[in-house]
Image 1 (cartoon, helix red, strand yellow):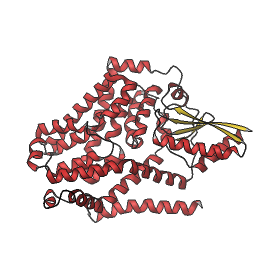
Image 2: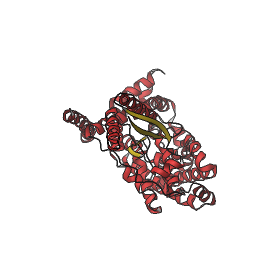
Image 3: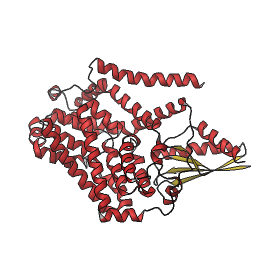
Image 4: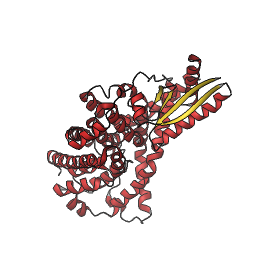
Length: 340
Length: 93
């Protein structure tokens, strides 16, 4: 029973990966191809329908790939090895926080608990904050979609910028008096337990099946919002005049505005990527687009959950650093890429 | 009559996948009752100091059997959970 099941699951996984590679080789666009001009002449109710059809006729490969890969990575990344060394030293704490955030946080429900765990386990407030900022900014789903839908160059810049900002925020907060106070408060008086973890080795077919189930769970959580986001994007594309985007979403002002609206609008649903793409096509500069995408880590829902553990002073500090980081990198990338 | 303690570790308030994990464990517990293994299921806050002190940093949902973490960051199938609990029950009998 095990072998045929494993084979079927493996064939499915490789087909999905193969589809993406094939579309790459054939230079087939996975992003929607409708341009603002295509919307003229359509009735109000026809706009989202036309856009959704356009989107899914291209985008289904990309979405399927992103969810399947996220599920696989989450299932197969060696979690126990990562969490084991979390409290061994400061440097290891920072390195692991940066390294594991993209893989462990596709599901938002693991983020705040891990933040608490890292803090309580003795790695300190620095790595905990680094993890918290890195998590939404560079999780594997949003990086895959940023790359596939917008530009791979932007996806790479987004990772690099997130690493720098997350590290800076972690180090700075660990040096502030209020950061140190939190660290002291949560210091573990007893040594952190490790001996009591013996992860069960599951057969391959169980693990593949579990990863696909997780992929389906993620899709169920995210797609409804993603669809609503697409509807919004279709109206943005159809009605937002290009000269408004050109005036307000380019240059230094563009970066500032994008960084400010990026935060509150953040929903952990990848909507920001499609919305960003829509505005980019209407003439938003690359610099502003980066600020827009990076504006997410200081979203309100997460800040509230974290403030219960780390108090508002720490939350405020990391929000300010994250915002400043999104502005600095937006400007820098805008200047360097010649699109400010 | 054997007794096995199973802790489902997740955040408070519980997340969706932790609830699913707990349901899986509860179903297995119901099934094992007929075979003479009593499974005590408990939901534990993954962020409490006791848990971190005992197990270290965990990825939720995690499942511990008799004080040993057996599953982490995933919802295992009923068959897997049943097999693991049976093994522990036999070893410690």
